[in-house]
Length: 117
Length: 113
Image 1 (cartoon, each protein chain N blue to C red):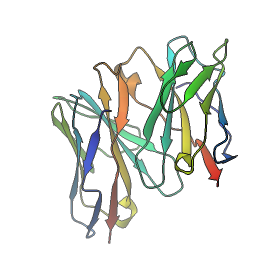
Image 2 (cartoon, chains in turn green, orange):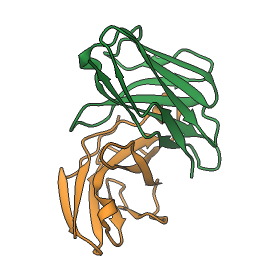
Image 3 (spheres, rainbow over the protein chains, first blue to last red):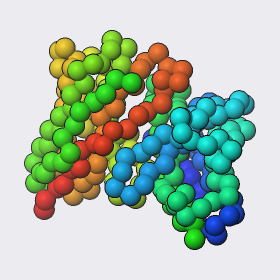
Image 4 (cartoon, each protein chain N blue to C red):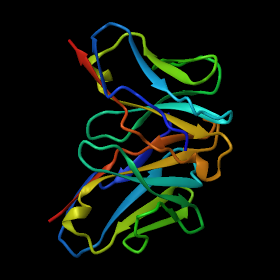
């Protein structure tokens, strides 16, 4: 089936630094990708919708200047957490929409654990 | 977004069928019913989706009520690897920003050996 890959799977960064997470669709082109955040024992919270070649659409309450999203190609979207703080520590998950034979099915990456120390 | 209601948790025994219910009384005519599951420390995994008719695939079956106000995900023979949080999500078929999936709390399925 369709595969969406995230990198890195785990990252530890120092408070105040920036960290980038990549999301790639490996066997299909994705004009739309989504970024979620999940805190322990909670459900996934949508942060933003990333559209190839245009600006991302952020959900209410998500700071666009803190969570920079770039979708420069049909197979890659990146999320950069700028000036990270310990409260940004979370499980970040991306998903991508396969518009091919799968009929607009959305597939998820494996997730990326971010720990800010 | 149309909301769904699921039990917080369910328990099953290995090798037995599992029926996971989902209520969606405010579903609209263009909403697809999607099911995803999430194993611990992993991203959600697509399970199945449908619109009006019952659906079967290699993972599960989806039974949709005639009035579409409820549906049931059926795992025919539960295994320990099926232990996960199962999410029932409505997604508008018209697309656009409606391609996004909004997750509720889901049902935590425990499978006993």
